[in-house]
Image (tube, rainbow, N blue to C red; front, side):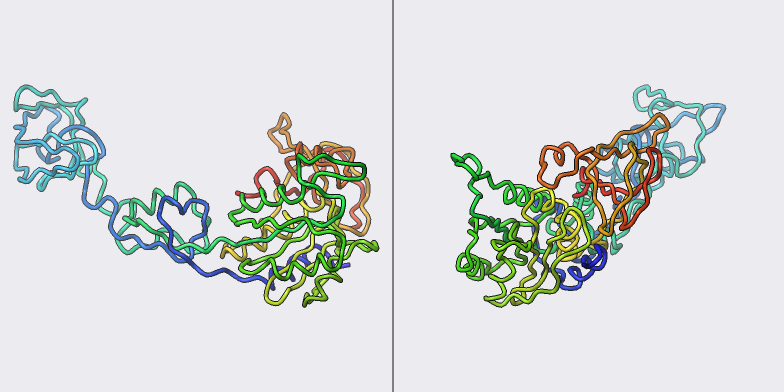
Length: 402
């Protein structure tokens, strides 16, 4: 069986960034930048006031008292057209362009205005309360790198740099097919031996949150002919996921069924719990990941393998997110030769440390435990027993899509 890191690297070696497309700025949040964003202007575009008050010449002010003549007004968006000379000032507001001749802002709290006369005993250094041209960024500056998942903050930055459109990586389209005679749509009348198909909606939700476009295919029956129809249902997608049928039972037919229509299997089975019967290969040029049928195993394998592949396809610079650190909230026994991913609650102790407490039952079909979990505690193959309070590594599944 392959190790988890080796299996993940082999999957990542077989997927590539998708082409770019141009989208409206308002549609770009959560997408991945396909090219650097270069500023079209400087911000601010001129020296501007950071406060309401008066634009003055710092050399005119004296601690013994100064009387200035107010010669005009400069609201934001309406620059004063004249020049500030000795003994003069201009009423100014936040964001307004500093008039020619002025080199400081006297805030209104430190000034007394009587008609067109302004008095103060405050002195100022040149540049006080002035935001210089290009203080935030300069025209032609690379302000957002390629390969970044764009946040609301990035959208604001691009807008300030005068970009109405952005170049982003196309969203991956991922086909999902659950397999099994026992599966019915949620809400169906379930007979003996039948269960609701939880994998397809769960995986679709995970993919949608990760920025992909899920394509939900019909449930495939445990029949070689039914599985062979997959080849005709995946035109135009960028990845194929199946859930179930990947183990060694006589009804686990996914690998054999797809190999009949051209699947080239790269590997099958990994040293991981939950999720040992994971398959990876290519159906023509289409990357294929066969997930286990147990829903918790399908979710965990998607976090460990599918999401990094989607990040690579999206062009993100770091497809594999490093684990975070915590301390154990309970004792855990020694591990066997498989890497363990223990579902766990997260809390903070009195010292502010992050505490991961694994659930006592780790069955790979228990979705309620998964829904209550915030993290996966990583246990290396053959790890010795560990005590509560010992350090551990975790994957934050409550933040896995950030």
